[in-house]
Image (cartoon, rainbow, N blue to C red):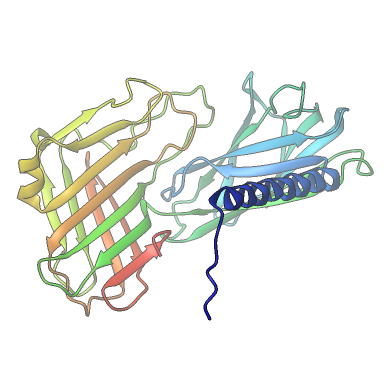
Length: 334
């Protein structure tokens, strides 16, 4: 005989709440354990990814002191990746240049003492903005992996710690891609593309324009050996760029001017986000494309290519596709 199982919704809600609190507790416990192991910590974030050959990678190097006392004699060593050279290092908030010692293959940043920061009743951490230049000879598609190490003159209380970050060398990079294939007239694609440029050496410097669509935009989406899925030259009259947030610190957004313009080129959506002129964070442009009601051969090559031309500059990216059947994907969309 089947016995009915009765589930109490309030009971389930309480169980989920308890599970959430347990997860939060575990996360806080792990963070606390890490702080005890490395009371002087270093994190590394690239402000531009990808970056073109000859461009500059700007890293935000976060220095964290989780103790109650200043960490003495702090030195941050950057092990320069092959194909890069050191340019500069500035420290917030006054943006003074950090004293440095440059040797073949590395640069030492002589920070000095690091006060407690980013914990209760302390000031924000004073990050370093470190700039490296990528040589023109570095191949497109290469990955630059940068490694930094932090150490103190008091290693007993502040053990040495290090971290690393990979940055793609390219004019553009496909973040995610999704294709639906095999049903003529009902196939489609969606893409998210980062367009690379050099970064800002200091957050207070005015950024240069990432990509200039004022003279129009050329787009091509294709797979090797097949006709383009999209090939269109968009005149400037069909583009409208606005500040949708009413905030100069937020990105400028460009779209097609009308539904008629979308229908004419076979796109369901096109959004080009340009970084703010006063942005201090990541400064790549981002392009989002969606095409629908097209036909894509299911035998399509397992990769996707994007080409962009604007303002006299060209940007291109390629990414492999995975999956079989109707859905082919790349990146976070897998």
